[in-house]
Image (cartoon, rainbow, N blue to C red; front, top):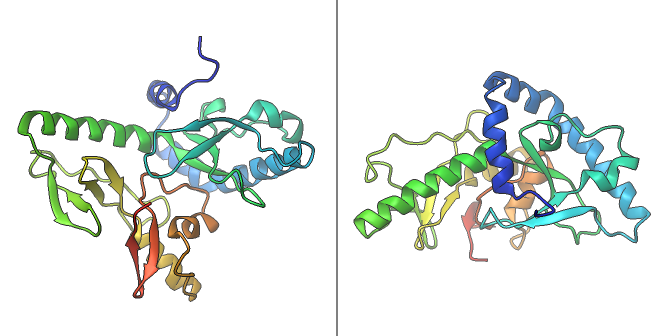
Length: 238
């Protein structure tokens, strides 16, 4: 038996457990409890590092997100430093996996990835792959920067999939597809609003995905790297 559950297994199990709760409960959980839970986990991780030569308490590297490598927090290792595992964490029946985006940072931060979003994107990727197998082409729409296109739900004869932004309640995330048929999410509007709210232009070399995580507990799942060029966020190659 494998020592650690894969993220796919986590998401599959979540679908079964989520049926017992309501969407409203999950939303309330996220908006009210999640920021505090993330701070507690982050404090525990940093306390663990102080006593373990700065080594972060990790389970494994997740490869589910093609754009953002994610390192899962091992709550077993930080139990002595935290009162209890947050109820929002998958380990406690919640909808989120707690991760460390950059385990090599001078001061690590803890953020979360939403398993419901990952499952929705995985299902949609399956639909795109089936379309390609049948039609011999990818369902690409308008070009959206370097090697990126909008996903054409019309070509697939599907209703558009609506994905709310975790950063701004009034935004929805456009679904993108690259030249190899891989799906991504477009957080450029969120990044631009963050820049406007701070009234400070980021360094041109800074990845705007990090800017999004500075003030929010969420990882920008499926987001290509972004930079601030010519007064707007743009996609850049890895």
